[in-house]
Amino acid sequence: MELVAAVQGRRSIRRFKSQDVPKNIITEILEVARWSPSWGNTQPWDLYVLTGKTLAKFKEMNLKKTLAGTTSASDVPMPTDWPDAMKARYGALGKVVLSAQGIKRDDKEARDKYYQTMVSAFDAPCLIFACISRDNLVEYQMLDIGLIAQTICLAAHDKGLGTCLLASTARYCDEIRKIAAIPEDKKIVVGIALGYPDSAFPLNNFERDRMKLTEFVHWME
Ligand SMILES: Cc1cc2nc3c(=O)[nH]c(=O)nc-3n(C[C@H](O)[C@H](O)[C@H](O)COP(=O)(O)O)c2cc1C
Image 1 (cartoon, rainbow, N blue to C red):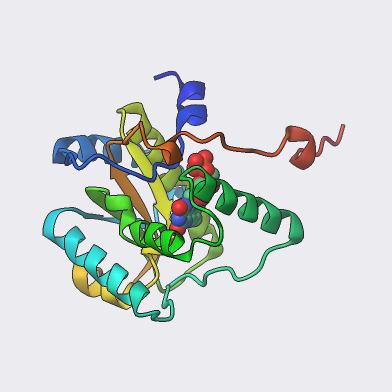
Image 2: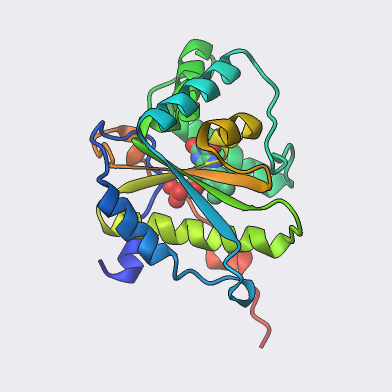
């Protein structure tokens, strides 16, 4: 796939087909991703690829904790507030995600149901947790994780697969560590759902919004 088409065509996929992704395909995606740049080529990442029974255990745990209203215990603090402009974009996304599914804002039951699919990784057959070292954590490692995460998403898209980066899967990190045998010294940053997209699902098709260049590019000539 042509690079620009891949960058512009990748989008978050929020419903997957039940079809499993063969291990060799996941491996091919990760083979591409390992060429991602990092600070001083430190490659500070570890990736934990959950499928099958391990993934089922994770989904059960994340849903159970969510339904019980358990307070998030993420390794990376979840943002609670944003500057106004970002808050507006976040709010706009929330609205379009509901309206694309025909869910009314006041329909709490339908909203909760959707939220439950999200914490279940949108039923993806594969979930990759991107981790960094807990000790000697420097902020640049977070940038490096972002770079490899984007490369995974693009390489998956290139193969006709879909992804969704999901902070909502990285909320109960001590439990995840137990389920996926992630060592204590690893910090779980984000989960990446991976699978074959259900292209007919409206939430995989709504029109997305981005700032214009004039809103965030500052030319200093
Ligand atoms: C760090 C990070 C965490 C995210 N967590 C979630 C999430 O928990 N649930 C969700 O539906 N989307 C999540 N997303 C996806 C974003 O909402 C999405 O990337 C953004 O709306 C842009 O849309 P696009 O990916 O379709 O271009 C996350 C994205 C990032 C980068």
